[in-house]
Image (cartoon, rainbow, N blue to C red):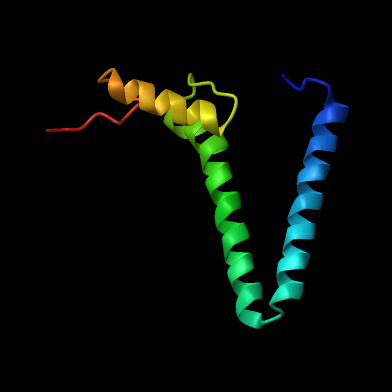
Length: 96
């Protein structure tokens, strides 16, 4: 199912935010140590950067023609391209 209505897309984003906040609070209540806070912060930052890379960097800087709907679609594309013997994403020409 494709979400196309902005209201439902915003609701989905809000629900993801609720999940992140609830999981973070529950984890920190379980182990209220500074180490847990720092590790959680690093994990959240790294996950956000990975998501940004997968959906923004690949599209805008690596292959603007490549379209995919999610991480599973990206993984499927990369695996299928590899089995077909093609380079999945555009690469810069090398000067030899």
